[in-house]
Length: 152
Image (cartoon, rainbow, N blue to C red):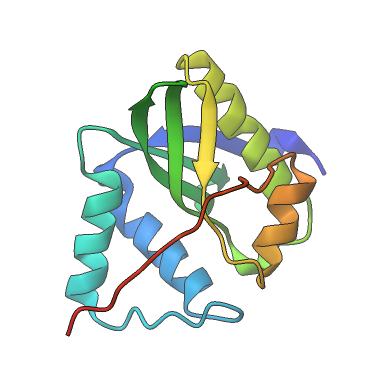
């Protein structure tokens, strides 16, 4: 892979439309099958991720096309300041080509430059992302559980 073809950038809400398009194109397909047909809900979610004072968003471009995005926030914690990734994706046709690995290395480099000490993220254990993160050196936290409660 010729890394000269790619450009890594920190993004903000001005890239919102490209981010929305990439995000929806990836997560509305297998294996996630998320229903992002409610445009207002998607717009609110994007604002939650990229429009806050502690938001931290990175993009990977091939030419002028956004092919990777990482959206999250900076969290100050007792063990250091973390980048909590809420969403990370690479364009579906670009997956499996090493682009995700390249993108994650650039994210890690940028986080170190910002003085961050950890990257934290959640993923499901039955999707390809689970093995991808393990391959990239991420580890499962022991004694932690994710909880949710549906409110009617």
